[in-house]
Image (tube, rainbow, N blue to C red):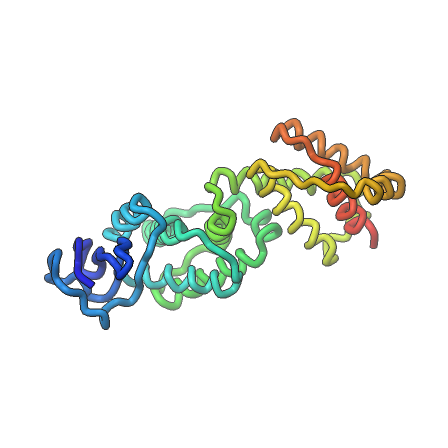
Length: 276
């Protein structure tokens, strides 16, 4: 491989065997090097392959001003997230999360506090991602000797979820508020009847996360199983009344018409979380 552009002493741009533009990172990889020179493969520590030139350019601009030690830790965090979740994660996370962690470290060094107003919601709705965020804080402290506040675990979790769902951060925050409001409606309807420690409550929250994702993506779920829907209506009227309130809230805030199939699923979940 040959260098097409030197970003700094540790980062260069090249093209792989398929002629895709790649960003290569390694200690001293670009030191006293110029375009056209051959790259020592033994020095390559990480190869970034972005989905388009624009993303590659944004990564180059960001990476040019971030110490290589921070880039390495961010790579470890992202790989750890991929290994734990076993899901597709948008490569944009190499830009968004790395930039966020770098900025968070700078804030700590300047003594600027920054609280996450959605800490509780994120812990509840995206617990696995939150645990990854906590592990990330541990990695940063061990490798970089910087102690980030625990609120940062939730910020990191949001970036991971964002990369999982391939949504922008504004949509992610809106989805979190959306799910929280639906849980508030159920709480208002049933109060002490809700068993928030049960596995059914956890499954309900998970269902709402994916339900919110479908709504924000403009997707609907339809079914021809009208017989089962009728059974649900006749058997769980109190739950139906609650779900009707949820339906009205969704229509008012998202202009989304909840389908009969979605109503059925919501009703079944509400019934489970209110049955101890």
